[in-house]
Image (cartoon, rainbow, N blue to C red; front, top):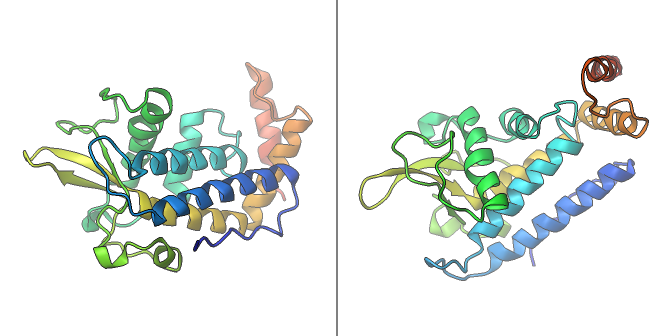
Length: 239
């Protein structure tokens, strides 16, 4: 198999090591799914939903432990902040859904329904007006000649003609948002590499993990939460 493992030997904190190990395992699993040549049918079989669920769960975990961490004390806000600020994103003029809207789509239209409701077609507040439900594809707009995960992983720069999330039309002309699994795979892996090689982000994450273990960053009601959060921020800002 062609998987290129993450390199995180410079990370010493045991919790971060565990999180990165699990992220690497999940990405390796997805690599093998991409290498399978099964065709997608109306009853599944190509691994599309599995790809989306795993990638969005990796993002969810990174948001808790690496960036922005539990200093952002709301799961949805953490998830969307990571997407908006750290995930590679292309321009709307190339067909990419605006990044803030995309973060909302990922969380409310994909992550939540797939994780909690088996993808039931329930219209959410994130659904774009007059759109049908989002659709998940393995390759999206990536041309046939480039649909090779080994080739995708070797790319240093993404081709912005291949959006992660784009608006498409069905056979009746109704618009919907389409998710490209391969594009998201490349972007998530790139994001992890950049996060773990950012000294400030790693030190920030370690500080908050250590503060949690000493009960200073644990979420508490009322003024205690606000005071402790300020203490954490002060320490991080003065590293």
